[in-house]
Length: 380
Image (cartoon, rainbow, N blue to C red; front, side, top):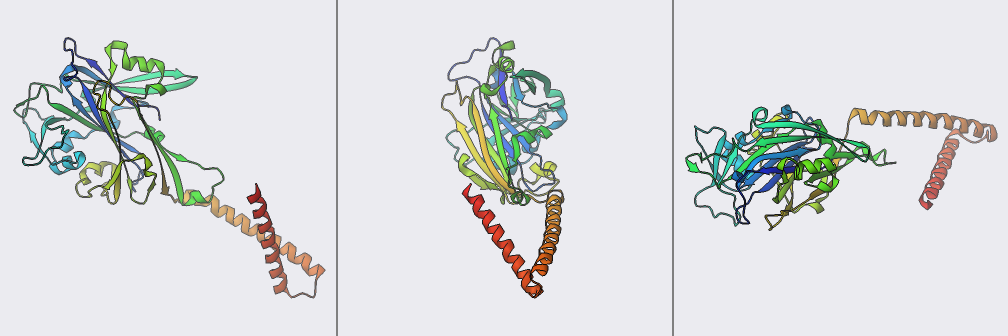
């Protein structure tokens, strides 16, 4: 899959300084091969936005066609579940909702807890309304003769940042957006690999290539890069850090060399979070594999990010096995016909030999032929 990207338009008359500038922390959760009815991947994107008051508009690019029905807000769910919010951010948080601002919830560390060195608390969860808060814009282009189609998701900051949330001044508070993408186009980021001449292995196993990119302008269409970096006042957002979680079933064999750590997610806590995509099945025995990229330079951030991993999952279906059953039937019938022919000629040549010995001779001859064929194959 081509690269996703995040750009922003600075607010006029609000210059930033090295100690007071806009930056972003990105969270990506990719759910795939979780034992659910649908095998289509699901993508969750979280954006921790620092000094958002310096920004006029956000522009998120997806390298595929997207419609508003395929976007679901997740912050409203987090705002009403302290345990789930703590599990998502891996910190104990308390949540405060102001009735006068129902789309915003202030999140703080639980009193008495030792805050981490780089805590984002306090921050504000903002519940996006995809139909009203996000304006989708289609992008089409051509690179080296290949058509490029994508979607800009433009988000106005004016409705997100205001003076007070839950009774507290929030001009310098961090804001957090989290939403889910469910699109058939996401199959391009978890592609099944069809190995040549491995017909029988694919009955029980399939190899998948997981590929994600973010702000990888090198792989993008030139006009697209221009629309993200210079046209209409936009510039590419500096990414402080990017955390990616590959969420998959425990029996899936994952190449762990691309990950920093892994853990099993808490089944009861994550139930509501995944019930829409899991068919209300609990997230039992799901492992979260964590990959991370970070930078101490806030101004430039991590720059381009690319991720690649391989995983192997058990696979079995009637559609997959029918060709093999037919092949086995054809092989069995052919072998029986060939055996009858050989037995006929042996009977003509050696009429005195018992039928049992003739069959044993056929088996021995078959074993010798197979052995010779295997040796010749090994020499190639």
